[in-house]
Image (cartoon, rainbow, N blue to C red; front, top):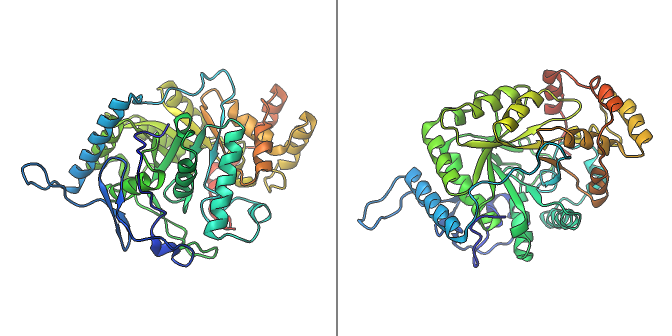
Length: 403
């Protein structure tokens, strides 16, 4: 459930600077769910840089964030919210599906076949309707885990408006979001740059209030987006202190990983002294399974493990371009299931997986993903021949067009 959800939260629909042609939002102060005023600025939202205490002293920015988190923890304790999520599976049954909003929160993304699935209308309103359609479809099919991120365009805002329209649903949902990347695509299909990465305390202090405002409350999980071994987030003492405060407030803190060094990044986060991290979202699929052993180590250490990109951004879906997809499709046909169902079934069968995300953008795609089946021993032998060199996989991924 979303922690400390409050009645009367004023939700932001995002910074008007990016979407002024599409949105006409009233200019108003925003109030986060934990009682801190979130002020709109020319570059987004910010929390006031100082906060006056009873003695008249004004704290620093990091102290302000810490005060926010401590207040949130107090509220969470009053309403009896558990500090950490329980493990989703015991490793002996297939991991449940979650819904990822990366492909429906913004007009352009790298998933193959997206043009045919979404059509030409990528306006804010069209994408909001699509996101709500997928959230409804996921809810109706029993999916109770939803993933978003600050860099997924308006994904958090779309999710927040859907939650506000269905106030009976949040208590049954686990909401995950991510910070550390900003969406800078200006709602354009042809933007030169779509995302900006910054793993700093300043970025956290900017994006955490934005997430609160967009969702109407704190997510259950908040991850550093695409952590790599050289990320400043692994060595910034002030940032790590604030993240520990976030954990104390009742939010589970973790990392997502991307790139050929996923395993090294995950191991570094897990073995930090007094690490605030206890959850990971990582890419694992039949083409790029290299993070598997590190994910197993995280699982054994009690981490929550979420799998993303199980169909390799569409390469392991019908019509995908993966080398070996034809042989995999033959296996799927023999089992009477679509190709993506076989790929997702392989991810769900991993003993360390707690949740496997679907990136579906149509209800039919979601139904196909839900048809996933556990692989046979013969399937597993065939899967082993599909793996690509991680460096080659990620190099090819970085060159995929945004459509």
